[in-house]
Image (cartoon, rainbow, N blue to C red):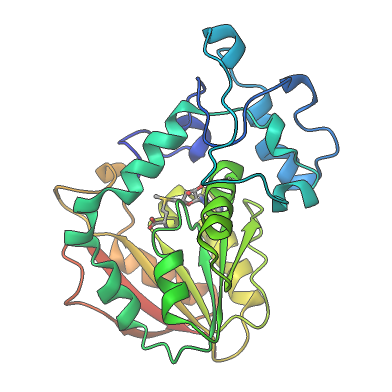
Length: 276
Ligand SMILES: C[S@@+](CC[C@H](N)C(=O)[O-])C[C@H]1O[C@@H](n2cnc3c(N)ncnc32)[C@H](O)[C@@H]1O
């Protein structure tokens, strides 16, 4: 699902900077990336260099934390990214609402997707490109003795999921700010779940190769991408990846096709691969 029908060239294009108060008020952007490292600095830096239509310049006042989203020890801080200094993006709220829109369930069938993995309840699953956590929290419910690692390259998404985890008291979700080119899949992962993310990734072969190399033997990867053709949902045709190309990309990355869930999703291909 690409975002609000914008060019696919990374999330930067979809997050047009304006006013937002999702939890942490904006302050001085000049120190936004102080201490940030490597890939994490990149995401923070692009936030910091966005056009100057911040809370101050718009005339709106920064809001205090929503009591439902109390200030917490955000994992972004541990990476040297101060969430108080992240550039807020107006479109983040819209994007989260887009991913979470109630009518999505009619075709995304999240409960059926989770059930289709046949989880026993004690596995470790990486929700790679977790976005708003649409699947993350459902997987967490299905893994009462296991855990979900929600990874995304967008700090704003990580902040959103983390606040939801903390305010909801969920115990079995870890949030991770992913590096764009290196997903750093934990070696104990039994599953990697990737829904509507691959078409956002510029170098798919390299990215899938990294994922495959990091998965343990026997671990599985569930991949969901939009089908070709004119559909009521999904990215523009130019951003779609044909099914045959999906299979080719992932098998060349070193995983074997293990199954396909053909009858669940009307608009998406749902493939399962296994690490030999
Ligand atoms: C269309 S959203 C899908 C979110 C979620 N999987 C869902 O189905 O609701 C795509 C997400 O992938 C993330 N993303 C894009 N490239 C990524 C990468 N290289 N590694 C991890 N996440 C990435 C984006 O930040 C965005 O949150």
